[in-house]
Amino acid sequence: MSFGELFLEALSAIRAHALRSVLTLLGIIIGVSTIVGVVSVIAGLNAYVQERVIVLSPDVWVLTKFGIIRGRDQFLLALKRKDIDWDEYTRLTELLTRSSAIAAQVTSAGAVRYRERRLADQQILGTTANYPQLFNVDLAAGRYFIDAEARGAQALAIIGWDVKEELFPQIDPIGREVTIEGQPCRVIGLVARRGRTLGQNQDNRVYVPIRTHQHWFGARQSLDLLLQARGGVAGVERSGDEARTVLRALRHATFKALDPFGVVTNEALQTLWVQISTAAFVLMLLISGVSLGIGGIVITNIMLVSVLERTQEIGVRKAVGALERDIRRQFVLEATLLSAGGGIAGAAVGGGFALLIKHGLEFPAALSPGIVLLGVGLSVLVGIIAGYWPARSASRLNAIDALRAE
Image (tube, rainbow, N blue to C red):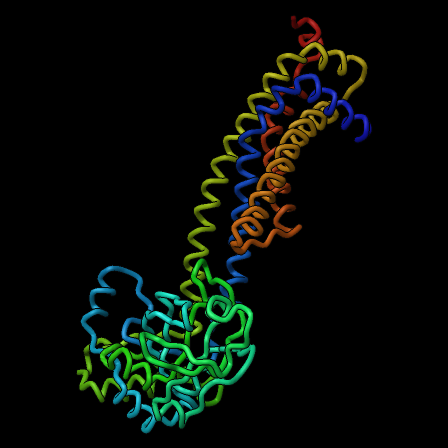
């Protein structure tokens, strides 16, 4: 028999038991939809994290009190560390030779007011003048403050896009005066719209000179220091070794003691994200694998039932000259078409879920033809495996015994 004839026979057998065929495919549909949906979300998150979350340049790294916290014990240990203060920042700028630039940052929450309009709990970031170059802050209008203004603790502010929309909906904010925690401050810049990063608003921030921030909020908060390695990415390790040695010496840390501070690098952030996304991917494989396995077992069971129901038909086919391989191909093809139908339906469900996540919830998801083909391809493979044993049993039936069956 030709492939076309086998294909038509398989379709006819599936249509003869349409409801049973649909119910048979539920496991395949669930498994494939899980694969397509979750892989799309993970792929979207990977791209999103690279573009929006890991904002550090490859040659920039951070000295901080906490660093990357992976557990409760690490958090409690970090709480006991000494704050990084302004004196240590000043000493590091004087002593470090393998860092081409060092910026400082501190963050508080405060109210911002313009006339009768007031915004509570905005992020007030105190920074040094070189912060935008190290942390990729793009301005839509105006300018950032210069080093002399920062060191002079002048009352200047660069506002985020949401702050502008709420306080200055119809007017240009540049040059106007706002109050931050009751202190008058002149707006000199507007940060370009950045949107949300994993649900966290990036446009409700106000940037002020770090010395101004310390006058308003106090100087007891720990600073985060951004260091740019001299010589680019190749110099990050040397820059880190030098800074750690100098800061340990300033804090009189013993040789065997752990670093009394945390370090965050672009590479460490990427490694952490890979661990998280890999764990999510493995969990997805386990869930979808169980579902596909159950779906395959159901298909095998239904195909064995189909062989019993069609024993006489198989005997007739053999009596008129059908070969064992024709019978085997027919039942394998029937199981494959069943499973592929479930795969296509599952891909549609999973793709719809990914699109809903992306457009409805504004959560990163990247649905691609490759992901869809992966899901459908796995369903086809499950169908071939699930149909092999019933097909083998059908092909080995004795023609005379099959004709006698009732």
